Amino acid sequence: MGSFRYYNEETGQFDKLSYTTVAREGNLKVVVLNEGENQIKPIELANSPNSIYAIKNNKGEISSINFFGEDKRKTKQIDLKHKHQGMIPHVHEFHGEKYHPSSARPCNKEELELISRAKELAK
View 1 (cartoon, rainbow, N blue to C red):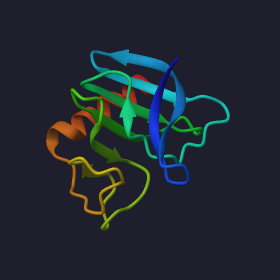
View 2: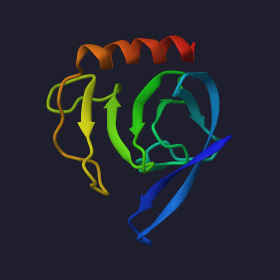
View 3: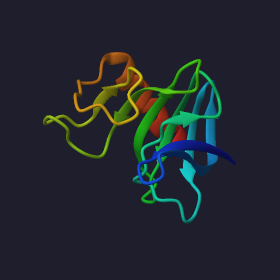
């Protein structure tokens, strides 16, 4: 069990979002949010530096893969379950923003390989 932090716009604070790890390979963890947690909340901070979390939704599918840097802040997110600028999957890169960046790009070869690896781990 672990937790992420997300920015609560109502309070202006970072609140806790708890999860359970279901699989792990190197710095990649496949996690499910614990019962009662809203899976819509954007994850902003991790407890482990230089980590990658693949979020498994309540249908058993990977919905996003989130990358965190040395300072535990999100650096990149790969979204797998919705279109953005006509792309599924797509990548958002973070450069210190508190909120989700509005621009996106297609996945590169390395990211597509990571998606496959995460999906295999999630089975």
